[in-house]
Amino acid sequence: MLRVLWGRRGLRLLSRMCAAVCRRPMSCSASSRMLRLRRAARWHGMMTAETLGRGREDGLVDRTELLPALLGLRERTVTSGSHNESSGPRLMPLLLIKMINKSRGKILGVLALFLVMVWYSIYREDRYIQLFYFPVQENKTMCPLGEVERKAAQLIGNYTRDHPLFLQLKDYFWVKTPSLYELPYGTKGSEEVLLRLLSITHYSLPESIQRLKCRRCAVVGNGHRLRNSSMGETINTYDVVIRYGPVSVPLIPPRCHQQMGLMPLMSPCPPSRLNNAPVHGYEQDVGSKTTMRLFYPESAHFNPRTENNPDTLLVLVPFKPMDFQWMEAILNDKKRVRKGFWKQPPLIWDANPEQVRILNPYYMEVTAAKLLNLPMKQPRKVKQKPTTGLLAITLALHFCDLVHIAGFGYPDSANKKQTIHYYEQITLKSMAASEHNVSHEAVAIKRMLELGLIRNLTYF
Image (cartoon, rainbow, N blue to C red):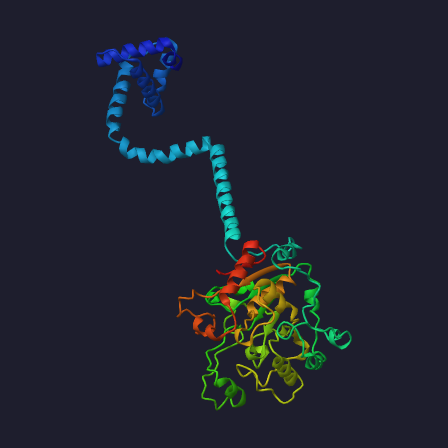
């Protein structure tokens, strides 16, 4: 019977039988539907084994036997139409599983391609962040050796690294090299007290810094932009972290200068609000590591251990002969010097002499003459000096293989209410009494940034 139904003869016979039942000719599509109905009838057991047997023997099917089956199939087809909508959702999972099984390889390939695209997009985003946002952590194995020296030579005339960072006793005791300038650009006239001071201090760098193949340095300023910057962890990753005392001079009337030196506790003059760039309490923004701290007597904290590490080098930046005298009196426990300061320096300075260094005035000269074009000899009333911030950058350019800065810059001159330090509320108005031209220094720093000589970690 199956051979008959699947052959041409069987198809013609089935067409005749359907025409007799339906009283109309049967189209090819209808014939195809009948074949599908026939299969369904067989699957559902509606055709008996006897009918199938006779079909195989005779090659024909009796209309009386086939008619009930066909009528049953027509009725089932008509009645099942109303259930298509309800049975459709049940069939969808089966069809989906069947499609997945057939296209498993293609689906896995598409999924793998999608995962690769996702990974690549994330990788590109990470690279974008590293390139265009700070902090950028340089690979220590790819140190740009010689790059700072090459670019610094474009900005600083007669650039050299032959000069020592700190003053040494042998240069004054044995050689007695005469200096061309007085402080802060030389030691002319201060050799005697300097000899006594150098006899109890040191000049060498720690071994941990000397053996570095690449010196990655961060010069940390005192600017307001460090507040809430969360730069602490980044700053701590550098090999050398240089900090310095602030550059601002509080508004103190001239009549108060001598009073603050002679009788600071009974003076009616306003107290100074200056502090030496504190670290304690601001570690999240400014870090906790300090390799060198540049200071002068007015910016010194009475307990250097409060804001520094045990191995921090305390580098004196001498601006005037009284600075040498103050340091000698403190370290030798002599009678304290009170006169000659615009702000009373600490009378007790609990520092280890082995950690004290005296900065070579050569770097102050380079900062003033080469970067700011200031004359070495100025009238007393018009004296301008570089800030310790710019001096710290100059020092790093003669010492480091990579120089990054953070916390530099001042607010716009029209913004009188914006604070200038991250740790106190004084404004740009306090700079009026200082001997620094901050706008001139801003131009010099921007020039370094344009040359790629330094890199800024905070907005300048």
